[in-house]
Image (cartoon, rainbow, N blue to C red; front, side):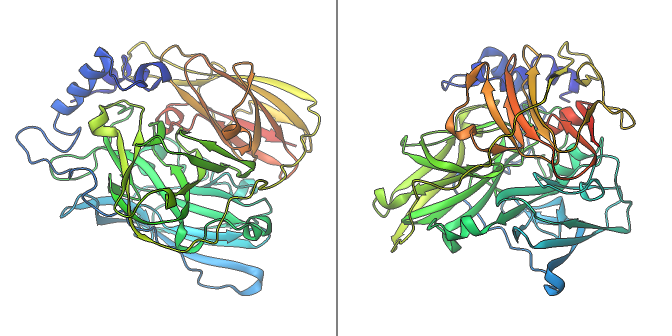
Length: 493
């Protein structure tokens, strides 16, 4: 069995930027990947068992279902969601047990509007407590779904989301401490698309040409069941797009808007089209950028989102274009083929990407500066710990006290030499001012709630705390790391 010790003793290093780009794999990566495969749970094969993961592009990518409200009265949309374990087909012909919101794997899409309240009543039919966090949402502490604010099996909890924030591609997921990592791995995540008047006024691709895609990795045993191991960096080598392994997507020869979410626990993606073609990034975690950003690569650490337009009119009908991932761990044959776009027809297209998408709010003068250091044990010990400023999370300890209405500069550093992290702050969308002392690229220049930090990296963030008062958390969103204690509390008063 691949143990936490064997994985941590060098495995997590392989998600650092330097080791995994350029198409080759380091000897360490080859050795650790072979070790994971030898257990019989790396790719669904081993021990003489059948290979259950199909070849790339042999299954169609499904469209995530849209949740429908049970009521639209009283100026709000009300939903009833059941959290339950079900069996769903991920590998063709195999029923895999997963944890779900309303039986959907991956989770459904909830479409909301800025200025219109959403109320969701979740009923927990699992055998363990859960907590539902609206990631990226500006909500009160009672509705934030904090790590200790759980509700028990056979009970319900109602969350109210005021949606008093600009349009953005948010998502919700389990946050029950010490359980969030496994719960999300087994399926408890869903997309929450919040639109506003500005976005709806733009001539962007819409309707069937706006496609949410949740990306993640997974590990299966010979029976096609999900295998969860803490810190399992090398074993999760099956890439899923909307819950299916490396699927194909039929598209028309016109523009599409893809709402990308990295819902992985640990995996970083670096996405590109196989022909090197242009993608136009129009948004990030906190909504639209000010201006479109033409690029040939999109990077996503766990929990990050990207709003991307791809124009397939430049391809002839019959063309097949692969969306590739150029980061490991795992060989390019295992993790390099995310999905394939098959151009199957022509279509009219009145959409376009405007030169100006939105005006970001002005950044108020910062009155406080703070320094935050992320780190974890990377010496191969059996039970590694995660730290914020040298401390494991204590739900009773307040680590930062913030004056309501203030703006602050946070300098966040990954102190590890081989382990990558990222940084997520509840409640607020921040601006990334600098990365390693230099201005950030346009793709990070919008509103963000999660930012990547490869080993040794430092980012400088600007945040304004002018909405709710109360206690919230900030943490590494590599969920295995936050489950190991890489989290802290801030209180706004």
